[in-house]
Image (tube, rainbow, N blue to C red; front, side):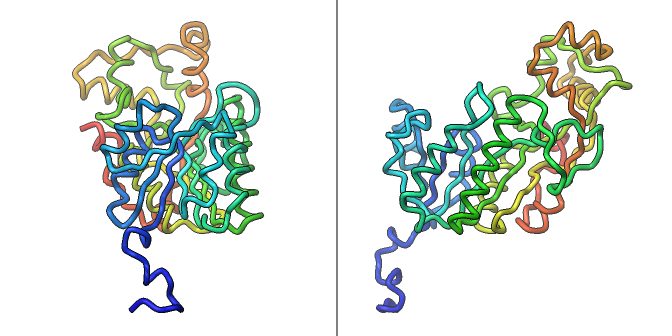
Length: 304
């Protein structure tokens, strides 16, 4: 029964729902929103007025604002109890001013916020020469993109320590899904893009977009304070073997294999950066602490 000792019990049900704010509500953010259910009120920051009707049609309350324009973020302070941050950093520089702008806003009224989940990248580990990598491994980012993520992680973790908000960092590898734009290797196979020969090849890591969304939601409720989680499936394949399997699956020619020095002359810098880092992520903490049971344990199940 409602009482003075439990004031929330006296409120209508719509006010007792947990308020979740998604910043960076793209494909994975929408999948997470769909997984949250009727016990939450889901809000999403968007910089595009054209997206507002689409968000509303999916049951998400749109909030107009732009991470690159800090003055538009003021209404976010004290708004949500749980926050999922999936927005990318800028494409230049060594820091992430977008995270900084949001955290400055949240500090104005941080009392309502209890949980903040930040979607980072497994690229912060750098090249590990194929070794198994747990969350305790020292960071060794080698690309500007990954270094911006290291900076963002540091900002978010400091925010958590200084405010008491429970912060989780999700280190995410390559995201795929057949119903995601560019979410399968089919297009690259059709282009005949080469992969590295076996002796030069690197281990690659994956996560299905649905499993990633479920990990985000699990972390919002179950993540331990100031905790890092590798969010990846159980696939243990080198990149070339993955593309060979995908080619057979799609009944397409297997990609040509080339030595690393030839790849450096033929491939764009972004693609080369993925071919220059080899690691195998350990996902034990995700499974044990978040209780996540993968729907797609490997890319073979996910692409089928």
